[in-house]
Image 1 (cartoon, rainbow, N blue to C red):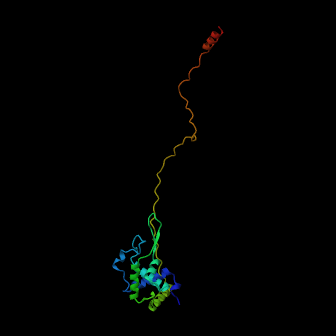
Image 2 (image 1 turned 180 degrees about the vertical axis):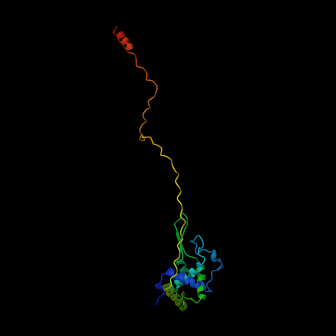
Image 3 (image 1 turned 45 degrees about the horizontal axis):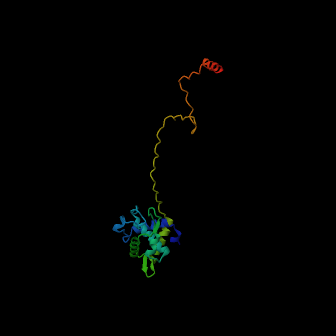
Amino acid sequence: MTTVFDVPADLLIRKVAEALKARQEIKPPAWAAFAKTGVHKEMPPEDPDWWYVRSAAVLRRVYVDGPLGVQRMRSFYGGKKDRGSKPNAFRKGSGSILRRALQQLETCKFVVHDKTGRRISPEGQSFMDAMAQDTVKNPPAPVPKKVQPHRAEPKKAESGKAEKKPSGKKGEPKKAEKSDAPKAEGKKPEAKEARKSEKKE
């Protein structure tokens, strides 16, 4: 016989959430639309039916790991809190959400509360096994993935023709440019001869 242990958790939880949504005992509180699921979260859940999904996950957790209490279950639904420049630290999930979900599951007679904690009831076990068998026969449709909008790359400015760079290498001294001024005329040979004759005398 197919049991909860033979079915993937994500498929079973979605199947159980659909079944719990049809029950009158399972109803999200008035503050469920605005509450975060823990101090490590920045925003409330985006899924409007998140309360039924959390209740289904809690029921499966009690089936697998029961008996257990609220404080132990808070660690299952915790996460890392962003503390800015300091390292991230683990924080437990909301205990109020888990406690209210367990109380509603007790009203459905799926969970029993005794001295050892909360454990699955015979009715809850048969309900979860039936959901597991139904999940194998009729698996739920896959959840469509959110496609992030494509960011267009900024267009590069159209550049004109590349300017010619000077051929000289960096660090080399520039060659002196030829000036248009006429060169200074050399001394006349007559003056040199006159000086030689003066020395002989």
